[in-house]
Length: 439
Image 1 (tube, rainbow, N blue to C red):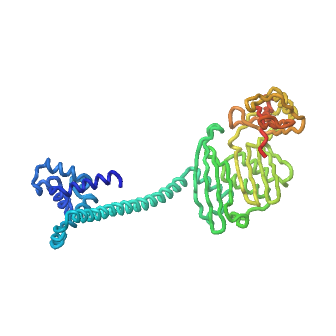
Image 2: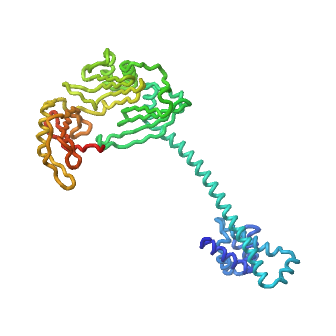
C-alpha cells in the first residue's frame, strides 16, 4: 500500500471517531451541500466546520460550484458506519457481552472488510477509467492516422505524382487499393539547397502488392521507382494500355507520354531522337541529345543524355530501366543540372600522367605512421570520364576519375590511389587512398 493510501485510511479512522465528522459524512451521503447548508444543519461555528472539513481530507471533495460531496473513500467510510449501526439489537447485545479481546477482533474484521471493499472499488474504477482512456486513445490514433493521410494527399506535388503514375507509366490505379504512405520533404545541401520531396504509395489487390516511390526536386518530377512486394513475377502491374515488349518501342512511347504532360523543350529533342532510332546497337545522337540503350534478356536500360563537343554529361539525362519488360525506374535530372564547360583539353593519357605525378607526392597515415614508400604499377589503370560539379553543385565540368593500382596492399589496407583531374584545366581536384574491401 502506498503512503498516500495509508494517510487516507488514517483520516478515515480519525473521522469516524468524531461525531460531528460522522454527521457530515452522513449528510453528504444523501446529497451535496454547500458550506452554508452544513452550518445550518450542524449549528456549529464556521471555524469548527472549517476545521472538520480540513480533517476529513480526501474523504470529501469540493466541486467547482462550491458544493461538497463524498469521495470514493468517503463513501466507503459511510458504508462502514452503516454496517456497524445496522447490526440488530440482539446481535448488539450479544456483541456487548463478548470479552473485550473478541470485540477488538470483530471490529478489526469489519474494518478490514470495509477497507478491502473500498480498495476494490477504487481499483475497479481505476481499471475501468484506463480501459475507457485506451479506447479513446485508440480511436484518436485512427482518426489522426486518417487525417494525416488526407493532409499528405493535399500536397501540391500529389497531382503531379498521380499524373506520372497514371498518364506516363500508365498503371491502372483503379485496379488497386492505392494509399499514400508517406510524403517527406527536405533541403538537399549537397545540391545547393534545392527542396526534395519524396512520395511513397502502396498499390494492393488480391494478387499483388507494389510500392511506388516518386521524387520531385524544386517541384519538378525527378524519379519514379517501382518495387514489387508480392506477386512477382507472375502478376505484373495492371496497365490502362498494353505496353510494348521491345525496349526501344517502350522507351519511345514512355517519353512521348512524358512529353505530353511536361512543358520542357529538351524532351522534344529526346522524343525526336527516339522516333528516328532504328535499332538498339551503338550510340545515336540528335543535336545535343545522345541515346544509349543496353539490353540483357528481358532487362534493358535507355539513357538520353546531354552531349556537346563530344562530351557526354550522363548526370544531365533522362533514364529508363526495364526489368522483365516492366518499367522499374524512370528518372529525369536533365532539368536540374547546367553545363559549365564542354571543352576537354586533357586527354585520357594526359589525365593518367597528371595523376601519377600527383601521386608521387602523396602519403597517408596508418597506425600513426605516414606511408610514403609505395610502388604504382603501370598497368592496369582505370580511367572514367564523368563530368562533375566544381563550385556550384549543379553545374557540371568535364572530369577524369583515375585509379592507380599499387603492387601490393600497404599499411592501412591501401591497394590503390584515386585521383580526380579536371579535363578542361588539367588541375588535380582530389587524391585519396583506396582501401581494399574486407574478404
